[in-house]
Amino acid sequence: MQKIQMLRNLLGVQKLGKQNKRERGEIFATAESTFNVGMVQYVGQDLAGKFSVGQKVYFGNQREEIRMGDSDIMVMEEKNVFAIVEETNEEAASIEAPETPA
Image (cartoon, rainbow, N blue to C red; front, side):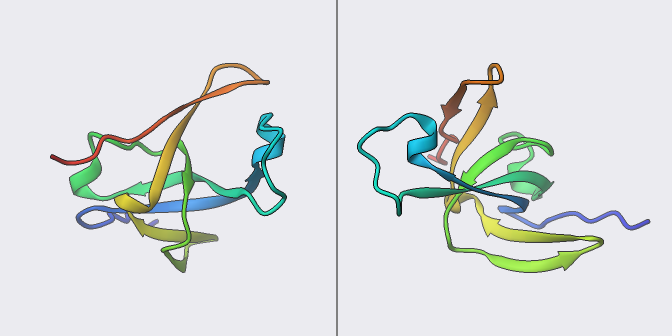
């Protein structure tokens, strides 16, 4: 078994798919309006207080895809994460924007 630690401000995210804005209830969203959705699997040492393993996040397209163990992992900088999703129940989710460094 290997222990893997992301460096600096990097996150390792396992992609769960894409979520269309229409699926979230935004009636004026275009079909092209989608978010990449993933689950945080690895957290860099500089981000340990902001992110934790198991959090669901929306992220952009600036990332590298690598194979770690049995999973394809998207490695990205913190600035590529748009939001942290907190599931409140099965039908609704509130979105919390990550804090930006001062």
